[in-house]
Image (cartoon, rainbow, N blue to C red; front, side, top):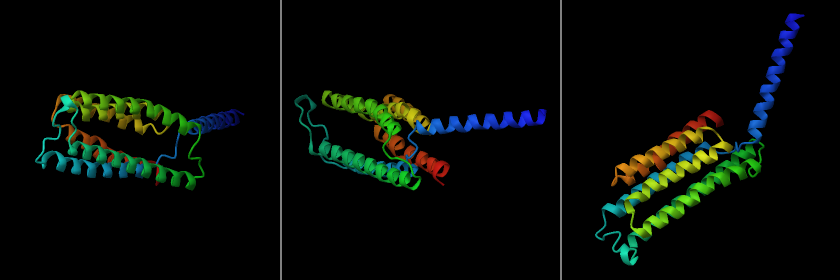
Length: 212
């Protein structure tokens, strides 16, 4: 009798665990592809190299006269590089996540995906506006740190609705951003580490952890 009770209790605990696991998965966006993180990191490394060429191999001073809002051609190039990198990263992330969702029989766009996107977008959009304001005010040295910090905050905020690993990546991005604030002048290096190297590492970890 005692053995039967112990077996029943064990089965009951297992059932509760499975129910909790199903509820947790249903409340999280689980179609996020680790390979999209790797590709985003590769795009960021390419963008960092192009930016380095623009910054350090130009005969022209990039910020000619912020007082009169005269934006040089090189700064426009940098914005185009950043925009292209963003479009490539988002597009690749969507395509790879969509492919993974179809392969696993999951919905790409559900309540969990909407919650993740909203919570991710609020800090990111705020950071984008903040960076633009700093740019036009001439606070050039803080642009790279600000992008890292606000991106990290967006990851932490959105991680509640997807893999918990994203939270750790977000905290590292914030740390890099704070260090970049202290070591002014090395923003491109910290940006490369944060958006390039860390994305590749964490994307690879997530791929082998959840997709293999």
